Length: 220
Length: 352
Image (cartoon, rainbow over all chains, first blue to last red; front, top):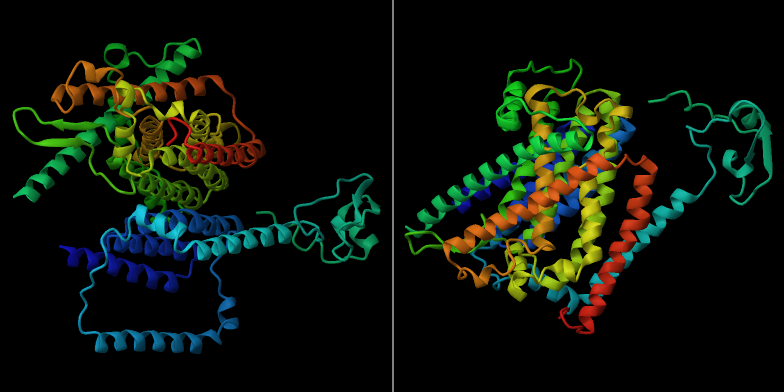
């Protein structure tokens, strides 16, 4: 019974993982990745680690992949053909990595004779994980939190660093006053000298900025 | 032999839960239409059967018999998959909610808890499956190849990600008090004081935050922006017709039902009926039956509250919705966790 379930979920995981790589459409790849995560969660449940399974589903399938799908939908990414040539140098790398992985699996299969593992009881349960996270592994846990905090602060600073005029911004006809930093990418963010113009093009010309309107007509 | 009985009992339990849930959901739809009718000074559907009692079945028949239209330029596979994901995710959470206490089946000596599965991670299971449900709506919006659907799907995913945080954090206070994620144990711990030691007494703020973010999670008024008909036609399910639309409809009402059950389980004492233990002995069949009915009554009251809100409140604007979620609910939920943890640390009576 357990073996059958293992074959089912393991096969699902491998199939979905292959689909992630093979699909042309990025959205299909993303959905296949969700399938991989859910199959892995099922495998965790079979390994008597329900807490890790739940976290796997909540964090990866439920949060991160939702954001990925969200971005794919928002940017309306089409099937990418051009990028394939640029990433060609990755092919030998991939072959090398696959060779290493297969070698590892072969090594384990050859050397390890006894596959039976007897984990201590309740190792994957909520209580035991909570206890060890907040006592024995408190420092690594805190360091991981700081890492995440750094990522958040980094994202904030990247998002708030003004400069480029957004493609959706328009100068409304009639004299409009804008802070220089909003339209001129080279201005310092606190440069508040105003620019007066009748249209976005005029503002760009006054500032000597070109290429601002390139994307603005491509409304989705 | 025991495992065989176990498996049969599980199947019976799943079937019973399934039928009860679908019946309650069907009649929630009817109740919503009738109650909204009365709020708006009209009658609502009252022709099919006595007082409209057969209306849900008439609706179902209509949905099945209608023509199923698939948009030409839709992404076929995902278009079909989306309502399936939505309904499946909604139905899968049913199994962890405790409907009643340990109960002896009449004429036998078998005692079973009135719950399909007792999981160590019950609450996390609910949160995980609920977060999968977002995909149904997102993929429906994307695969329909319709700009209104896409906008609805995007709005919905942004909204659900934002409010999921507040929802999860608002539950942590209750979990800190209960000390377990197993929903059955959470309810059992609330059976003190003759069945009145409900966690809402210790977690009023958590309960309010939960109720608000639960409405947002189920995409209902005043947070129904994913299907705001004045702006987006019908939002993510604009292109869905017949039974596929019915599945989305079903998923929405099942989700409503599950958030109401979670609120009852965590904050309103679950199946605990006040002073029932002085009438029937614990573990007897009648105790279990009345408890289960008590549970359903609480759930139905919360559902009524949601319908009442729908008849009362106008819709939010999208930026208001985001500001409210991130700048008010989320900090409040964090404060709630902080206060609860401090009180537990100081061993205030009731918080230990």
